[in-house]
Image 1 (cartoon, one colour):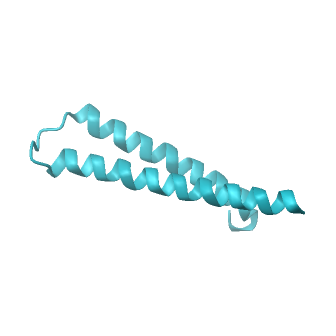
Image 2 (tube, one colour):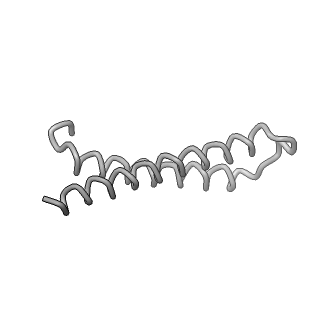
Length: 71
C-alpha cells in the first residue's frame, strides 16, 4: 500500500513537471513570435511546439494510468 501512495505522488510530480515544461515552452514560443526581435526562425518555434506535443503525450499517458476509465 505504501508504494501505491508513493507512485501516486511521483505521478503527481510528473504531471506538475510536465505542465510547467509546457508553460515554459509555450512562453518561449510566444516570445519568439511577439518578442522584441519578432523574427524568430520558424525552426525555433516549431521545435518549441514539438516539445509541447511531446509533453502533452506524456501527460495523456499519465492520465490514462491514473484513470483508465476516462480514456
